[in-house]
Picture 1 (cartoon, rainbow, N blue to C red):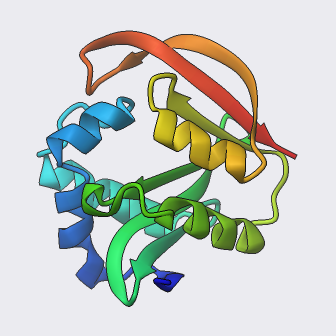
Picture 2: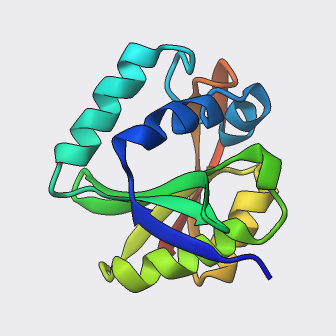
Length: 157
């Protein structure tokens, strides 16, 4: 079995994370992304803000020592939200589920909220396996899809 671990995001991770977050198929599946995934300056500015914000907990996800994604919690409008990104090359291997389990041991804030495009069955399955429950749905603008789509809202605790 592969070893999934979390560690602090390092400056050296940013090139690989940027590449993962530009993958057209992954961007389409995530749906709720930045308007231009190819904008490195915006990516770098956002990464710097996240790393400096005490309300953000961000970790690199590794599999057998290799960087394969990131996971974070942040506060938005008073709620603590969860986000994660997994390299498409390792989708379907259980890495997201294991990383989320590790992250939930570190971030003990409850309730914890998450959102996913309603057609993103993989992400919804990962969240529900980790104890998140669907609490609603709404139609929101998804930059990666260029229009409004249904988004599922989930809550843990």
